[in-house]
Amino acid sequence: MLSVEEIRRQFPILHRQVRKGVPLIYLDSAATSQKPLQVIETMQRFYQLMNANIHRGVHTLAEESTAAYEKAREKIASFIGASSTKEVIFTRNTTEAINLVAYSWGRKFLQPGDVIILTEMEHHSNLVPWQILSSEKGIRLEFIPVQEDFLLDLDVYRRLLELRPKLVAFTHMSNVLGTINPAKDMIRLAHEAGALTLIDGAQSVPHFAVNVRDLDVDFMAFSGHKMCGPTGIGVLYGKQELLEKMPPFLGGGDMIKKVLLRDFVPNTLPHKFEAGTPAIAEAIGLGAAVDFLQEIGMDWVLAHEQEITAYGLERLSEIPGLKIFGPDASHKGGVISFTMQGVHPHDVAQILDQDGIAVRAGHHCAMPLHEKFHIPATTRASFYLYSRKEEVDLLVAGLEKILTIFG
Ligand code: 7TS
Image 1 (tube, rainbow, N blue to C red):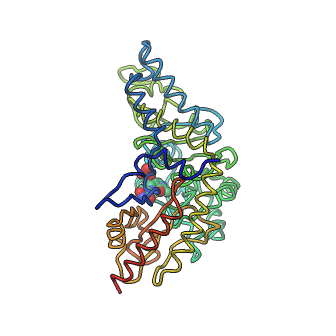
Image 2 (image 1 turned 45 degrees about the vertical axis):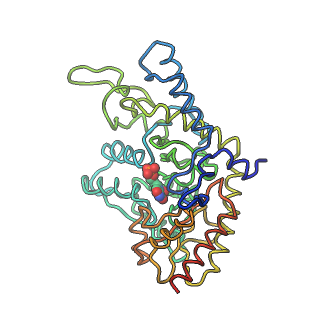
């Protein structure tokens, strides 16, 4: 069993100082995680020894880089429990993965008047693509409300399913509230109503074991950069029989089998959805991140974050005038968003930064959710496998200092 200190040794950035020589306290992993040496060195080795374009050369480097790229796909397929590597499409990020489904599946299979169910706690990535589709094709969007306890109103969800929606798309874990939604039950109910399902796994896949076959989800999107991997690489998981029926999203090299002057034959899966030279080093880096997480074990990651989050909720609730937006620890991942009476969330973040504490302030790309609670912004601390209780204590000390400054 690894200790947090051993894990932290893998992350050089966590040992740097910021501002006037204070140690960095990184509490912004929901925005992007830090990267372990294993990932950084894998990418460096790729460029030093192997760099070549994939799927196009017969020379040694091209063969090696193609094999490494496809090996990364295998690792990811196994990490999420996909039945085949054909079901793992590399994208740039979660956002692009959701857009791929909206553009390809949505445009081909939806008709005016069809219903898509979303929730009030979605990140803009799982709202705007459907809004664009809605205005283009006359799709009706319905929303599962967020209750006072920051959980989804599943009674309303059941009623909405009577509209016979074509798709239910929701976040597995909210990036603001930390709410972990009951994905398996929600997916089963959607299927019973004849709908397909998409989960936004941007905040779940990095933090606990997610198995697409166990969930029986139809599509799942997630980003490499939130799970110890590099930026510029993400994944769309899709059931093979659905992906087979979907038209290509982007056209160009690699996604074709044959091109005539006026027509083309698309490539087989997964290449049909990977047009142009992909993020090769990044995909291989994400494969290394998956190795890293699997060596530690996702159960360990979850247990560690639950402990830190429960401790954080307890310590932050001691601060007068501080309001936490999110459910109790039993329904929550490692995200704590809050407001402080009389202090703007951005000021909180800016003052904490003076002490080296990195938190995020704003609407966290979930403006409708903030509007629902009649607040323009929150300050958010978020944790990962390298977070320590001492860092929560330093956050609390920083917030107490703010209280004294603002009276
Ligand atoms: N969905 C959720 C639930 C997210 O938290 C994010 C990013 C995305 C989608 C989009 O991911 P991307 O990699 O395509 O950008 N969330 C955040 C955040 O909370 N702070 O910065 C980015």
